[in-house]
Image (cartoon, rainbow, N blue to C red; front, side):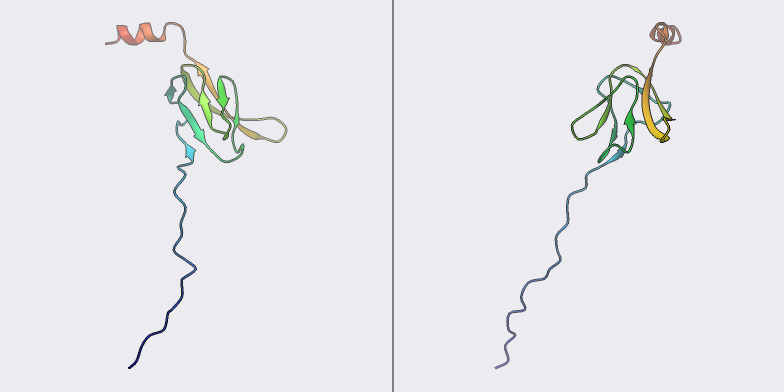
Length: 97
């Protein structure tokens, strides 16, 4: 009788889970303290003013404000900052309702 011998195992069939990296808040967006701005591996984008960096190089907002991207320094590196809102910003928003 014809039998098929054991075929062995394949070397494929593995895949890693997605890491969901990238920009989460774009330039001109309003952010609150603690909002994640960028998830990245290494410092592709450097933290600017009012931006903190986590141990995995995640950049996050430290204050309420507007996201701004800039290139700085002699190496022309990209920085992300959060510009503070004017003090009367929320008063004006309530008056407009």
